[in-house]
Amino acid sequence: MLGGNRSLQPRTISQITFYLFSPCLVFDLLTHSQLRNEDVLRIIGFAAAVMVLVGFCAWLAGRLLRLERRLLAAVMVSAMFMNAGNYGMPLVDFAFGEQALVYAGLYFVGMNVMTNSLGVLVASLGTKNLAQALLNLLRMPVIYAVILGSLFLSLGWALPLPVERAVNLLGKGAIPCMLIFMGMQLRTVRLQGHRRELLLVCGLRLLLAPLIAFFLSPYFGLEGYARQAGLVESAMPTAVFATILANEFEIEPAFVAAVVFVTTLLSIFTLTPLLVWLGA
Image (cartoon, rainbow, N blue to C red; front, top):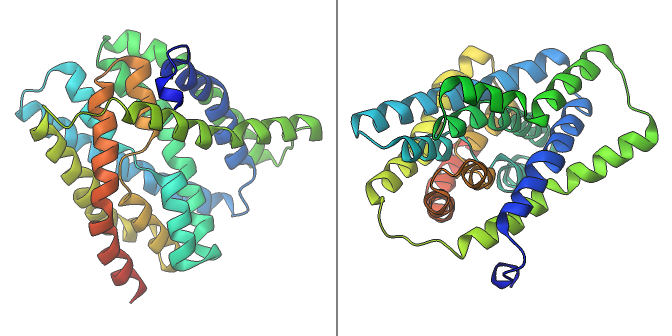
């Protein structure tokens, strides 16, 4: 219904989410972690490593297929970033309980940090040179939210209560706005064209990513609940936030929306055996 309202543009919602709600969400998640700093860094480092390696594989495949810059950036963003929040966290909670959910929440923080840093850089490179892309990155408020959140976490600082409540409230608006934006974008989905690239991203996101996570987990010392949460989160379909990046930086937003739609449908067939295996 909202998508049919011509006075309401998807870009407006994406920009509010991108520049206001997401930075507040990242800061709030970082400063309210209940685990030790070492555990926080370990899970976030693991999430970052998975995304970087998947991104490298996507870049390599794109270069071999000689994809145009915008499409290559769209393929990389779609393959690298997973729906670790509104899909991954409830699934981990349902399958393994609250102890695993804590680690899933940290993975979500890592995904948010990477999406709003490396994701912005990759998306910018779809239309700009490296210097302009780096300048774009410095203009992103979430970068400063990460720096401040890490500083507050390491030093044990806390915001004044009224400010903390305001940040928490704004952060809670991020995921609902992402879902509204995604619903508006899905109205434009047309599963025509770029089928080769669509199959490539599905393979990278749903099959290669959890395989990479499986081999990386021992190097990051992930065991028990941490390993279960890390592998499941790595196997999630493409993040809704990828469509916001694609829309903001004009890198094939219709293609990215199609990827989110298709990978979410197909994830039923890839996540089910993974959950059975991890629960064995």
